[in-house]
Image (cartoon, rainbow, N blue to C red):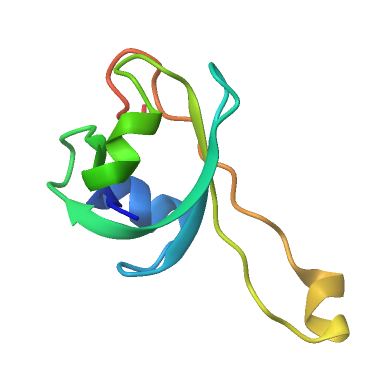
Length: 94
């Protein structure tokens, strides 16, 4: 299964919880898989796949990290998803 290490600042901006199961989509090659989140160093820009998951993404690939939530229909009516677009060169929030 592997894991994904993500800069702590990016985790907070996206509202993801450390240890949470997330779904990864690799835009470059179409790979799709799930894994869990490990906290990386704050302001490092780190987004790194570990273990077997690392074989599904190459450095420089564009990935989408999807986090899901369970909620009541009433909660879903007012839910606003968080979408984070880090800097393409540094992966930092700018």
